[in-house]
Structure formats: structure tokens, C-alpha cells
Length: 120
Figure 1 (cartoon, helix red, strand yellow):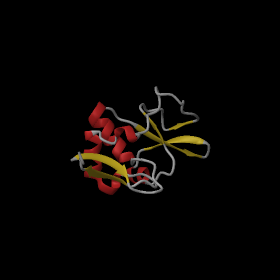
Figure 2: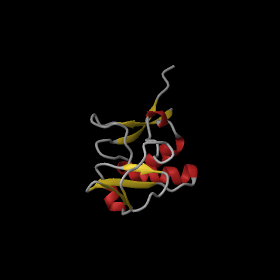
Figure 3: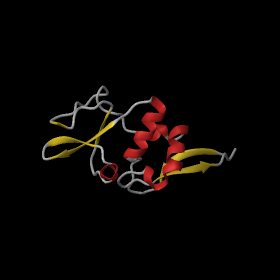
Figure 4: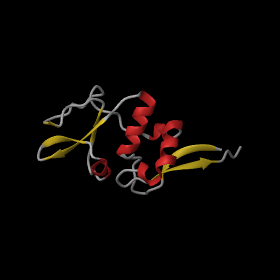
């Protein structure tokens, strides 16, 4: 049996919660990451756990750009690369999804760990 992460929502697009990103980056890279959302034409850093759970839009950065900024560059130096299906069998991410349950998902996604049987 092989475990993989699968988005079981028909509307989902393999989107993970802020909490899943935080845990992954701390455990895998020993790094803190930062979340920003647009408010009144500015990017505002969000730190409150409850507010992070309910963000409708976000930009994740690998460095603290300050509490309020006008612009976030579109490059790998500033932004965290979104998780993609390439990580479906990443052992750390699988553990995080198992530990967080429904709290591992963001927006319309419903991330689950499923076991695949080898039919050979």
C-alpha cells in the first residue's frame, strides 16, 4: 500500500491551510513563513490563527516584509511556492494532513490521505 494526498472535493485545487504550510516549512526547512492579504489596496501581514483560517486570498512569503506594504514581488526570492500535486506522496506532508484532518485544507479543497493498492 502506498499513501498519497488527494483532494476529494470536486471544486478543490490541492490547496492547503496556512497551518499546514507553517508546520511544513518549520519542520522541513526550519523556517518561518509569513501570510499577507489585500486590504484597502495594501498587503497586510496576518498573524492571528483564527484570521489565517478564514482568509479568502493570501500571499505567502519566506521573509517578513513588514506589517503593511504596497507590493510583493512575484519571484521565488520573496514568495513561497504553492504546494502542488508533485508533493502528493511527500511523507512529511502526508503526516501533516493526517494530524490536522480537515484543518489541513483551504478554501474549496478537502485534502485527505488515501491508500492505494498495488494491483500488480
